[in-house]
Figure: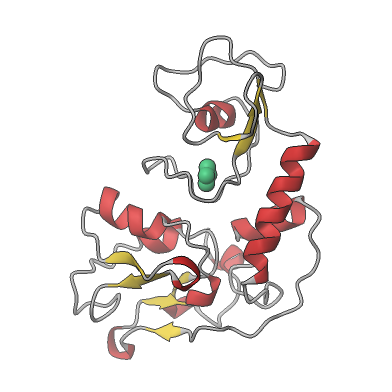
Length: 216
Ligand code: FES
């Protein structure tokens, strides 16, 4: 990878091998706790002999494979993907509680994107069941990486979150009754932990500062 010889375990995909060897590949939907998903396309890499870039999170490493992770073409593709996500994102990064720990914001800065003119939230912020309030949801900040849905299903083995609708209208929705003590939700917080943006946050912490300053 990038002229450095690395070793992969049988069946291992390129992304974890790169990260283990200190080679950075941007990613939004990959999580070492989860099955590879291949949704965000941020982790595209070039492989010698292949006509188009491929997602490194779902492509297995092979003997003798030559991989490039940081080329002009890849940066252009990643920049376009992040710009498209931001086009439909509130962009209130300067006042968002997730600022400083937001993977999307970090990627935007890395790629030289500087337009953070705030947009109206086109979906209402959802304060779950005020009496038992634990998890705060801002669907407008969801980038549909599916990490919350998958961690609830694959790690916590509960599955109270799911996708609803299709195409532009796709949303992550919780089970009936929301993420509260009164549902099957175990309030383990794994979905909040996995969320790369400010779409899922701990409700008690909202409006008390930025996550980077109070979570140690
Ligand atoms: Fe590979 Fe999202 S991290 S497609």
